[in-house]
Length: 167
Length: 87
Image 1 (cartoon, rainbow over the protein chains, first blue to last red):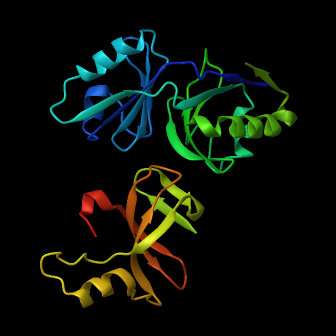
Image 2 (image 1 turned 90 degrees about the vertical axis):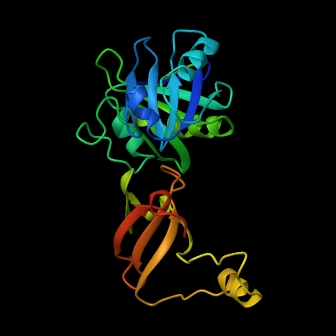
């Protein structure tokens, strides 16, 4: 079984700086981690981080990120309305995604906490492995205008896995 | 064809976009019109080893210098262009 949920309303803050900022944030490109507040900090690109699922209001998250010790220039932007966010959860989700994505999604290559950018059904998608209570789960971040196409492709690929769409 | 991105690991070539041969941009203060024309329009197009600029558009979105054999498509190395300086 697998389920697909639309989490687009989840706050998203984009940070851009030199890759050195990753030392202060505790995560570099290719990985994700929960910070002390519980927000998911994703190494979204080379010198780019996406902060998701923050429990605080976005202005507080931005203020905290701007206060992170770092000498260089940085930009911190609220991109909540610029990107769509889907969560795919369930034991079969790696097999489901393998219908659309050429990346090896086995635990050895992409364990919990892995973050990568890859084509999913031909769309440029940031894929974050973020298991929920031990159950395999992926966050898929995509430009807002592609969200419906991505959702439709996931639903099509999910038929054989009994994908349940929530939201 | 696989290209080993230094940030993302081995990825299919369809994730990348070929940009250009790696060439030195002429000095704008010194270059003659002929040098600019050659830089803009003339390519070596080698049959064999070549050093090229590629963009990993579906991955890390970084420019890479790729050493590729144009006959066999064998990729020898791929390195971040930003850490090696401009072309």
